[in-house]
Length: 170
Image 1 (cartoon, rainbow, N blue to C red):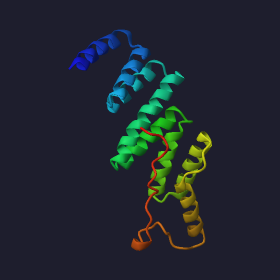
Image 2 (cartoon, rainbow, N blue to C red; image 1 turned 30 degrees about the horizontal axis):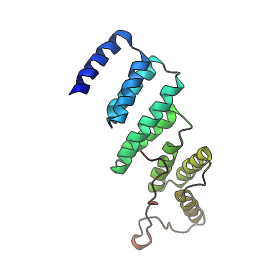
Image 3 (cartoon, rainbow, N blue to C red; image 1 turned 120 degrees about the horizontal axis):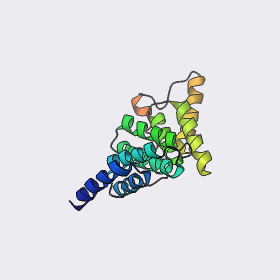
């Protein structure tokens, strides 16, 4: 209940001053408490007040990636993909979002996008390309050669999306 009172006071102050630092602080607090929807609203308000602030953009990328991970873990892929795209829109070098976008593309059998996102992730982190990139390359090679998909809907031949989670721990 105490945070509700603070939120009301903070909202009243925000109406008067419309200042990015206040919304930034509220976004950080909400994120720390796991209230990612509120964190997203606060960071968007901060960015509305100060749209060129790189620290705010980085925080926005972190918030939307965390929320995207929550959606991803709940198998809500459309919402997850939207948040990961939003994250890289705010910060085009935010590697973790690219890794998840690659996993989502892989699950949709969009081999080119899986490869592209996975390579982008690897380039930004200096790590080797994720397993799903190697598998997507192989699938693309098979498709180009006129073969059937190993990862398609062929029952016994079907492989799952790699079980490893991206390296970012949210």
